Length: 119
Image (tube, rainbow, N blue to C red):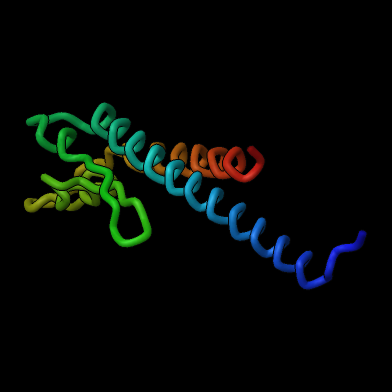
């Protein structure tokens, strides 16, 4: 008993669609988990003056991407991370706290995607 070539092609296409759908679902889970972990990490590692800056970190889904942002003091993120000029002269030193978390999130995302594709 043989198999028709068009049936074989249809079965292969069907299985590839199922696989790509499964991988897409796993990727979405990885994106969400990594973003939420990043927001949590930034909450705990952000500089503290009044405490509102650190509490403002959120992970939000925007269209097809997860974004980690500071919802309460977004104006301060660049100033704190990069430093800035003082009004009377001189500079305020940078307080790098976002870049290390970003690098860790990239690593976690890549590892999560590898696991999703392999497993």
